[in-house]
Image (tube, rainbow, N blue to C red; front, side, top):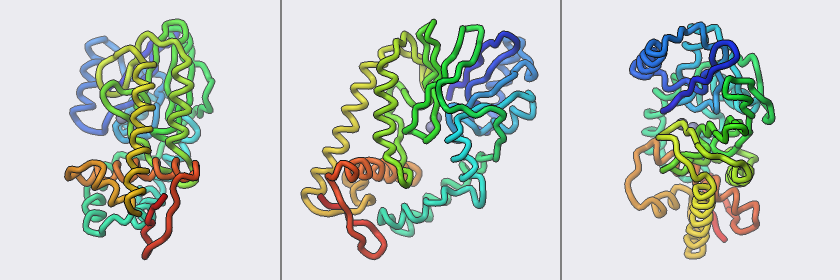
Length: 296
Ligand SMILES: [Zn+2]
Ligand SMILES: [Zn+2]
């Protein structure tokens, strides 16, 4: 997990916060001490999105720094939804039932998520982005680019002058970012649209949240678009054979035992693709004892 400190005309902006763990905190503390930067020098904290590896330490760092918190409005809304009640996405249970996930697996997934959910803290952003805003930094202006798909209010930060993109989890060199289904939204279409917008930008260097900086975003984007097209084709081919639940499709598409957490991500990834295909009129579903049987 990478976090970035960018100099402001006065002080610094911290892009993302890292996991809420002792080693993550120590890594950040040591890196700042090495550069002789004090906590109070961080005047702003920008979150690319509210996943635990990006926002986990935010509450602690906000207290230490007194910085202003900034994030996209949609992400703040999503965080509020997740931090209210039992820190569970409200539609989670329904999505598992509709996907045909067996109760024993659901229990295992719940166990694994309970620790992760502890790092969801309610936060009070002082600045909310809609996309298009500019942050004045020592690197020149950083433009806020709204890139929904991996998360509803995910943002990237772009320096047009220096052709740099802080890409968050939107562009990661060796990984395809997970696309998670949200009710009432075509998250895959939103992800593909935001990739199309990023393909128009001139970028010499991508600074991702995971892995090393790299270049060649247009090749990465066309490969990733191709990957999702293949996934859609794979799903259609399975459904031509016979109708299936999302849970059954995960078993056939990954062909190996997935850890409970990865099984969860795989279910939501399949649901996002099914929603995309449904909106194109290519697949439909019928309800069988609460689970949705998908068919062509
Ligand atoms: Zn993420
Ligand atoms: Zn991440």
